[in-house]
Length: 219
Image (cartoon, rainbow, N blue to C red; front, side, top):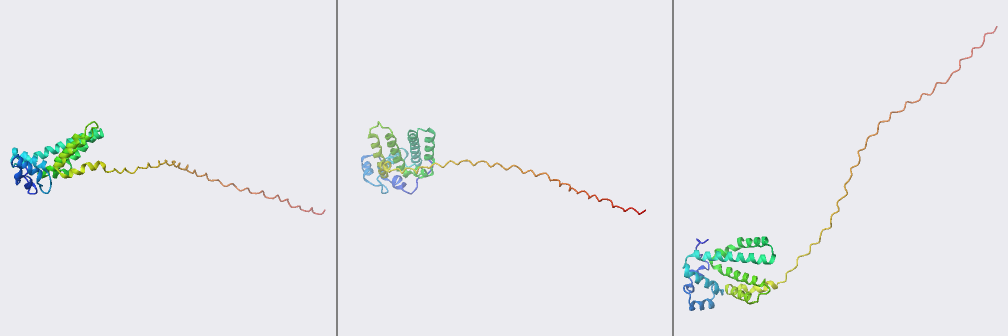
């Protein structure tokens, strides 16, 4: 990423065609706080560009490296905030990892002019972490909020976010426990009855026929 060049979309207005970053003096400081840059009031990002110009000149790699370091710092702050809230180091690491490598972060890191988003997120995260300590006075969160506003005006909505009522999730009605069905006992196999041998018919006895009486011959 450090070998990438500037792009001609806002980088010219913010950096390589911006005379207000060529020197760190009162005149330029007045311009940072009185002039909009691409219709935005962003004195802190312009100051960071002016500071980098004293070291890197117009070498794009230096500006890209600063964006990378800011993104890594924001990732560490996300990890710390999640670990304080959830008390679960594994969950905090997973959340910070998703924040670090999510595709939505590509524009913020690879585009130098999006320095305003990185700085705004950095100070808002610092202020949020300071609010997690109940004994802390509101000085640090207030200062962080002001610096976030000087980075990007959209930070003005940050105090409103905690006030948005969170709609509780619909309670999950536990399912009626399913009573296991009584196992069906298969019927016992029907054993076929033995074939009945037909009874032998009883033959009635023959009637006794008396012998015929032969009449005696006369004498």
